Length: 155
Ligand SMILES: [Ca+2]
Image 1 (cartoon, rainbow, N blue to C red):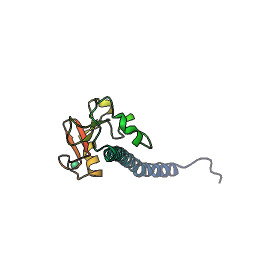
Image 2 (image 1 turned 60 degrees about the horizontal axis):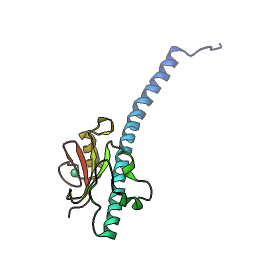
Image 3 (image 1 turned 90 degrees about the vertical axis):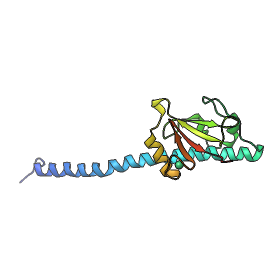
């Protein structure tokens, strides 16, 4: 007997296998993408912190606060592999340097005023779980209204 087509059972088996694969692979992909954006945001914040620490070590003070549409130009020499201020946070939002004399402690904000580039409180919570103490009211990652911030300096 020469078979000319797949039987219904064979087609059903293939469809079920594809369904099982999709159900297991797709959620892992989504989780991996989420973890990547958390890790990349944490990395940016650490890069900014390292630049600020180097600047402080050399100058004995932090750069002055700037308008939120700008960033401290004096930090540029300390960014060896790209300037995080020139892109959006992978989590969503724009990095904003909050320095003296307006801010104490020195901190980096990620604002969510523009929905397009913002992030939710749930996103902020995931970032806190990822790189801090899991509480948005304490530690280095905190949130206040629509602003998630990373504290650089406790002094
Ligand atoms: Ca926290």
